[in-house]
Image (cartoon, rainbow, N blue to C red; front, side):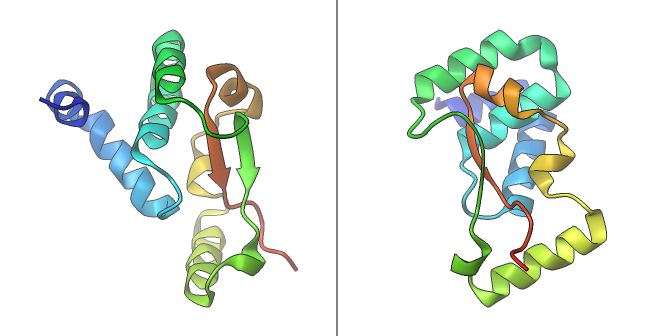
Length: 118
């Protein structure tokens, strides 16, 4: 049985939240990062476990929050993100309430939306 299936059986609510985060954020958020972010935001006591999972996944870039360049996005994606920010006020990643320092310590690299270039 693969890891994702095992996680669905052991923690279905966390899995559902991770998949919702991936859907809301968009295609740039991979499963492992989404799962780690959900785990840190809902159960901070599992920090060491998330840190180990991030280490095993092997980060490709520097840990922390990085921002997209809105000029490189398609008009459809810019519009989708603008509507979300207008309704919610924060990106899906910002809504989790995780600080940049926590993500760096955990070894998680995530690309967030940032704010539209005006």
